[in-house]
Image (cartoon, rainbow, N blue to C red; front, side):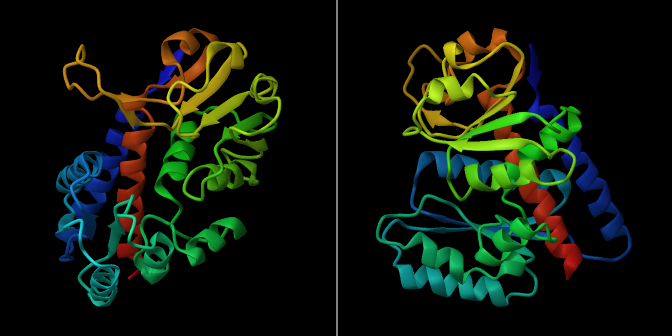
Length: 290
């Protein structure tokens, strides 16, 4: 078993980006600028935005956080998005999810200028991804593809089972892996918690990508020997025996699954750092396109 070290890979990517930013600045250009819009005081969201800000500082980006209270109206958020769309000094921005229940997430995503949609959620960017055209690919699927690429994991001709069908992870993940690219050229099955014969299906997977949102959902009896396992899940749980008190737990029963795998990600150092690195890559791309 070998760990897929997203922390190390993301560090390499940040170094590569920092070198490009140094070249931009030495040529008289300004640094790329990423903005995060945060609604409310969700601890996980606040922590994630803080990490993104630190990432920006490390690579030499300008970064800003617009923190709005939980009672912010939908219209106020849409007005803020319109201002960000119009600001030529801002190359890309994200609206941190999840949003309060009184705000329509789809309406917010549709309001973002696709040219600044570094999360890759807008229909135009999703459509371009489906067609294999240049675009901003959702950060988590793109980070997973980069992890597979940098570890030179063979995907061609392999059976990949993706557990989860979200528009943010599962569906784009399946599209990217089935494309005629490297990594890619896999035979992909999308499954979910209501799929019949799920255990038997998972046992056919050469690559198992788990984004189902249920802690410890994938157990050792669902994984065949030698499978590559990518755990996208991150759920904060209360655990007084752990230093943080609220560790992140994945969708895979890591301790019991790991010895059956050829490669596996660990929750705190796997997909998460690669997602943040992909966001930086998309922001640099947005800057370069201008």
